[in-house]
Image 1: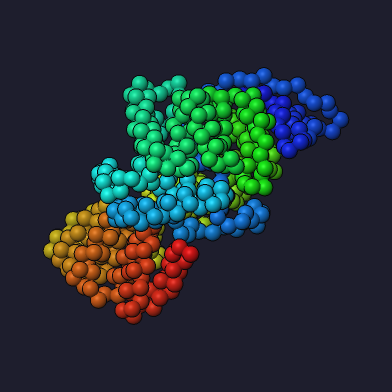
Image 2: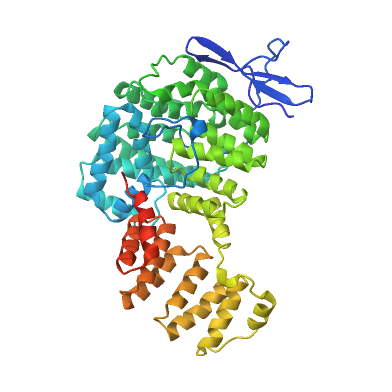
Length: 541
């Protein structure tokens, strides 16, 4: 095994007790790690620290806890994604419902002022604006501010959006490999974000999210003076906050220009009452988390798991669950990986990267294709700019099949597709369409279906096949356009509403899916009744 990149005698204060990580080589030649010294051995010498050469992206989302009291991690069971605060805020933004946006965001601010344990819901609410898609996004923000010029919420939302653009401009490479253009664009977006943050904090100095965003902006340039100032202001308003302190610790991570000594010094100086905010105790495990992450990026997956196990002894840390899940995934332990990603998502719902990696783990676990597809669709809805998520979503969508093709003669299908049918021969077009679909030639089938729909624009079966061909190409938004066209001419077609409801479900637009399922049920579709009841679970409690 290769040497670690950090000094390995890691001391950390937990209450009044001092703990350490020990390294030794067992009888099988494997390097082992523990918070207890090996039997019969003295404390080993520390391993010399080496600089990291790993590429890295923006750090994993911060450690948070759910609204409900934390369950025992071992009792957390798999569950498909449910109601989404983030997607709700995005729908309000697209609908330009600025009054509701202001109200909902201020409600989360008031929750934090009443109970600091709700700080994670505040962060999630503003992260809804980080990966917004659409050419008119800037215009909508301008309309929001014109509508509510004194709303600190609008400034913070736009700052979160600009911060997301800054991270996107930076890219995922190591800092030493960034181009001048990347650095310039990242700085430009962060400067825009800082101006909005200043305006927001002038309007509401208690806006905790503003201090978090300032700390986030200081990370890539390792701007410790600005970060210390933001942290001090956050601590003055919220003495028991976790969010700002965890964000500051990220700057001390060696991956981002800090050092283990800096992490240790910061944590050792903390004198906090964790009973007021249980998440604070997790800060004591940051060294273990840093260590496990470093081991993972050195491909020392088993060692990474051991270090992350130590971090998790201090509490249910979703970032540690996530990194341990990735290590298990790399070792081919897909069920264990799925469990870890499930725990990470339980404590910090709607984090795209958690759902993406759980989708991958589920895909390689027998019989979990449907669950994997649901996860990657939610991950894509949360972060439509992530190319890895998009590629995996396309890959899974292409594997959808129909009972029509069970036992389909592929050799005969290949013969059929060798000839081009007349655009006016409905029977030949349909036969060729089915042959292309049986061969997974979806774009070719799509072109034939366009001709069929022109010939018979009210044929439900042709629209259903077009739905299938487009779904396999991960073009769900275009499917809605086809069903809109069909329903426009057939407003009482109960099955069409159910099909469009299903498409909205895959697009994570649950209000639209519920509306269409309800309409289909009212028209007499019994399958729609069951679907509507399932969709009702996606309404906010």
